[in-house]
Image (cartoon, rainbow, N blue to C red):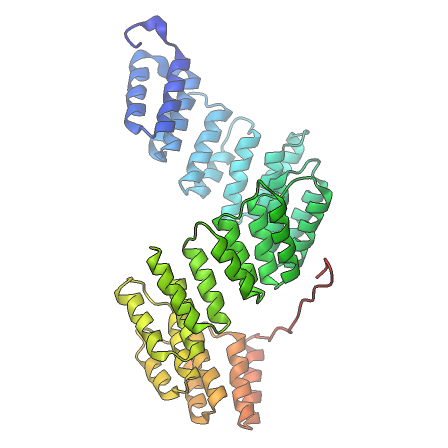
Length: 460
């Protein structure tokens, strides 16, 4: 074709570059660039934008910048490609700077990219300014752009603005609903997420998809709303197009485990055709929390037989199971395997779990000696585990040593200080107990009041 000049035009090169993008063929794309430069077609705006898009797809931001800088009069497509390329490659601040320097009016696609960058940077003021630009310059609603603004407000924690926008959107799709439900769940407003999901089902404005289901099950898990979670499970069974795949299955397992219905968690786990590391870890951790230590060990063996390698979270579940079942020796066998066989570096949670395992078995001296041999300074969770053991088994002298350790520790939670105060109170050391409470107040720490959720019908 190249030997016959009349057989091709600028559209030919545009489609050829698109094919290079689909085939991930950077060398062919570079050959096309060399040819269009030699033949003089490089001055065509369509070809320039196609080359720019090609390098953006390849994540070659340097070459993309060279192409962009060579365009005499970049149009909105050129600017949008360059901005999205910078954002895609992690240069979100540079993407915003490039947007500010635009000398043409941005289109909705440009603004969606900029809003995404604003979200990444949590640039709430700039994002609001972009939203203001949308309201002033786009008189017709654009659903994709509205969803991007909605996601921006939710991820930046401005739930009131997100709610106002959501309620006043002239048109909403499943992405709008899912973004709102997920935003509520991730920000801890799980009751609102459940209510919104129920409104979604009743209004039938959009049908929930897989992402909606995973988000609402996460909300049910957080507040132990078993009845609501069961309703979601029942809803899934009415939808032929909504399969219990690995993502939905894992969300169901997690929900049932956290709501205390281990039987249903096991049932969902067994029914899953494809189980990944999250599936196995969720059921192992769930059984560990519910005191089924021996069954956890059997599950772990099945996991290995099925060719799934454990990760750090899996071992945390195994250590928890051993701790609750009093299996100290097996717990340390798992800990050794984690480091030496699977090359997983232990985290604070693993060390705290081992201390808790010693403590539950009444081996307080061994637990303290283990803490002294740690490869790093023990922090709040580790000392907290030993403190809890002291409270259970009663060891006044060790409590005093733990207090010294806490004074030099990081990440000491309110709960650990409250536990220390209660440990003193248990030994009738009221002055020391009050002193700890006074120190908490001086540090601005306040124990949050307890709360419970009760499900009455569809309400929480």
